[in-house]
Image 1 (cartoon, one colour):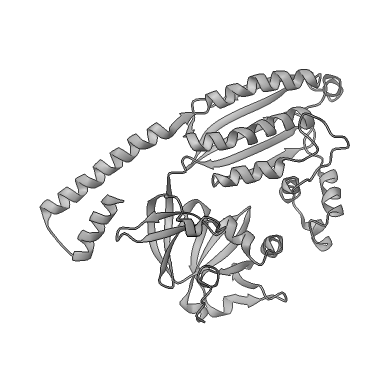
Image 2 (cartoon, helix red, strand yellow; image 1 turned 90 degrees about the vertical axis):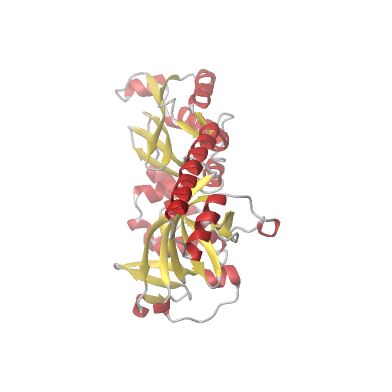
Length: 376
């Protein structure tokens, strides 16, 4: 923060001095070195968390009379200590689910032409600016038709969209609160209760969860989580007189809007046509200031962000650029806001709120599912 303030002051004054430039450059280099040292203290390998799963697999498989082999990969991969603490419970739940619901009994596996001993693989690896935690089993896979039937019973999708649902979209129904296809409750992983909590816990650390499955082959659950919660790469934007930061990992693209690109649906929801894909619009001036000033569509810029594999378009006034941001705790006045997740200090000492794109989508008229369905 101090380095940004010094650099910002030099730029604002238009000072050109070789000695001062060298001093500022040295300050930047020193700041980066200090940042690396501070980050190394926060980072811990996942091996301790992974090793706790050995006992869990042994005890759970014994209770269920199943034979299970646990394979650990990428144990030395490092993650922010705060992140690893948050994902421990979701990891336990997914491993239990794999043993209880995913892997077959030895007799069932032999009939299916498999080894009687099932395999669960836990893997940690770096992918871009994220760490992926993968839980994979070689069991029977998710029952697509059962999930679809239960989702239909609960009215989780419009009837006319049933024939266009992809496997990925169908599998995400298991993250709905209380969703289950189990015929009987077990004391190992419960009756479906928990996968919604798993998803919420992963989202708390600004991560994502996705699931892949093939009948008779197995299931793969992936936690995509940030390396750290302390520092993010962000896009600085302006809305009215306020400045906000959008996490770069959430951004798909930014574009200018021609007036004819905006349409309004029967439900009053504004949409933008991006390459023949209709994406719902969120006017940040309405949402954040509640003091909207009518604008021409051409006066605005759209930042398209991803929320749970869907896209929404954030209408902003100006994109100010990218920067690495140190995340600070929210002031008390914003503690209960679902639209922001933290704040950062700008070079001039002002505060920039960090937008929570998932919270923004969920807060819209309490109609998050309708919003996401419209974006499909």
